[in-house]
Image (cartoon, rainbow, N blue to C red; front, top):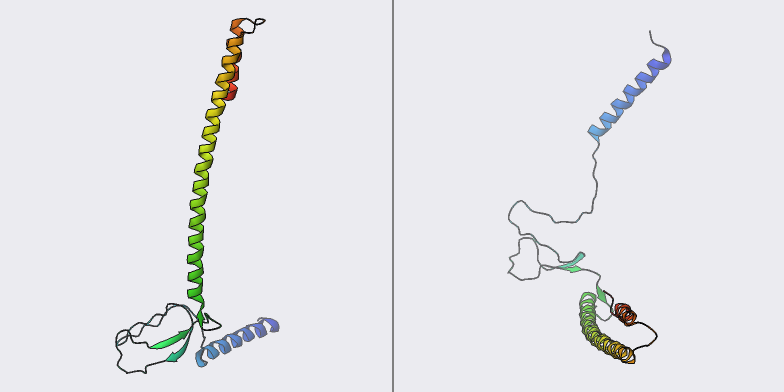
Length: 166
């Protein structure tokens, strides 16, 4: 025979299980959920989609009323109307279009500046190359008497490699 505490624990567990099962069978359970999407009727209706999320503020037709294509059925309030009945979405689109135009102008100006800088640097390089050639010609004309001619050639080659690396 089992001790009293074990029997008591077993009967308590059985009673709790019975109470839970009977509660689940007798009571109703309802849960409210907010989910994105749409309801699809089984037959006889059309699907209606809102372009932006919001709350239905007005309904223009009732169930069973005939409707025409393009006829407004309801109004959805999006909370996107600023003071003075100005549409916030339209104002944002206008501001973004203006910003895009300004950015395109900046890009064009930057491309022109880059081209001008490239031309300036090319001219500077040509000028420096011409100056180096003139200096080398002067060195050759002077013909430093203290150094052998082979040294002059080596010195010019080193100088040219510093001015025009690679």
